[in-house]
Image (cartoon, rainbow, N blue to C red; front, side):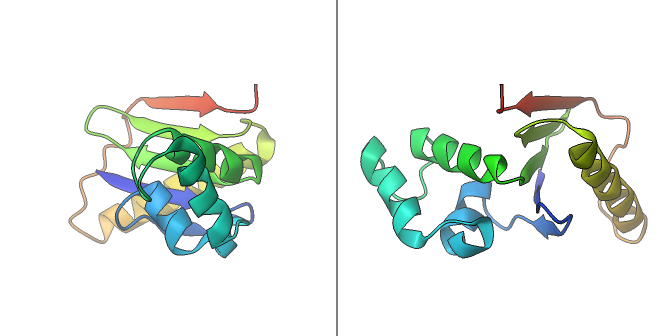
Length: 123
């Protein structure tokens, strides 16, 4: 499985461990403070980094700021964002072209025909 974040200005970030780990590791990049990330976990009574309710809260907060979360699974591609508007579509198309180019130049196995499941958090 591969995972990515797309920033509000279109920068593509490869996720090393998990999406929430990237937020915790560099919260300022996502428009949060470390204290805000820790507070989310404290509010939910979860250990830092757990993929639970605090993770969902943090992902929703950064998506509200324009970030797009992508995870490539074996059977489909998962996209989570605030709203699928024209700007988000443009950034996703840019990511897809980048990924196809990257996959051609590496041994990465990306099937461009995988179905895409989009979750809009803004509704």
